Image (tube, rainbow, N blue to C red):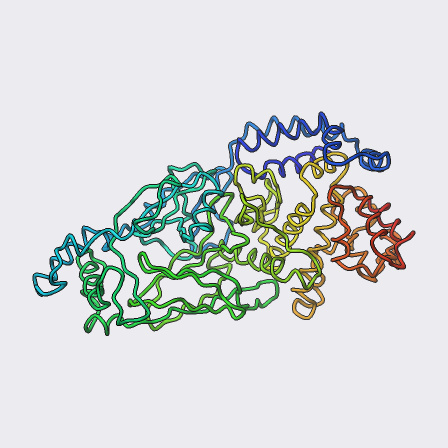
Length: 613
């Protein structure tokens, strides 16, 4: 009993900061103390509903006994230090990272090299003066101050919350970077970018460039530099925005780069145009799937690749082959990175920080052909594994006849998924909606299990699917309030059994027996190895009832300790469509019977629902 209370409290504490723990504690206390009142708010009570929800099943302690057990645990755990999730991982790391619940914020500036910015108005004016000493006719008729004026601001924003950050990205169309743009940092699994002066339960500084006429008053900000910028036009004979020809701009830019120690004037051969011929950075992003032995290499679709050269960048998504091709650049090298973010979701390092495959150098004439391997870039391998699960559920949900797991709202543009590279001993994988109150990631997926064992590709994929199934269920109308009440009263059979079924259907389709082999199929989340006794007393609500309602396999035929599963023929879409918006295990059964005609919907269906609960 005490173990169960601790496990449930770990879920409560999954948000990872002291203020949220306090908020959750207060809410949980109110749920326990006034549970009938809260239930009345969420659903009109019938005697049947009340009896089923509050009558303790066999071998189960009462609601109040559970409440009395775990409430003291809350008070003890409140004294613990809050979770801080910023750390550094190395590119060759193979063990669990040094990220712990108490790891401090790091000064990532100390891990990078500050570059002198060639595009400041001051440096551009100096460059123009130097050129005119050699060629007095350069930009003839224009004074230095007239020729070089501020066109853009290099700024950093400090959004108060995700709503402000989304406004910058969605409404204003800004590309935001967690790291300063005038620094060189280690690539790959480089430093985690969270300013040491910003609390780790807040969004860190977001760096970008905006036009000089941009309204900066909307968000807290700091102007880091006034810039003189131009973007190369596709029509190379055209005048650029400030009236310079392409050749004039490149001459000016080359001199600015030279005087600031950034290269081209000393290292490029030939004149400006031949040395700066156009090219389109491209490449292929692959992923090591280590479910099988030996592992297999798969193209990674839907990844956002960012190609950058100073204050010019291009973002592209990889196709089904893992291939991307950026817009045109004119330089001998660029920087390339992966930002684990899409329009529907993003992956975070912890509760707040954006996950990146940090920028690495790509030279003209080469391709960025990257294979993300666990042994080389373990954190990014973990995020890539989560990404594959999210891609399958969000964009291939139609294969399974189920809904997309997340709807955007005015305040929440993306679903935030915390991809935590550590074990889940104290903070289990979760979907915890109260995290949204403080803009923390509500979904958490860990790289290692509670015993510290590394999960393989399929396990991380399956866990992602499981948690996204909770997201979808909550979108239908289920709530954290109901989850808590069910968990305290008995076990959360309805939400966990549903998530197990979705996990089973999707994971075993993506990882069929033909790929993983008979010894590894089906996925361990199948749960059809559970005896009735385990289901009734030890399952914690994780049952195979969805699987049993769909398949025609009866695990009790040869062994009577297993369920006598005589139900079959339902589809995953039917079972999802029957989920009650705000209801119980028993209402789900009723809706399945009412909505669909099935030859096994009578005593056979009743048996599963009765015996499993």
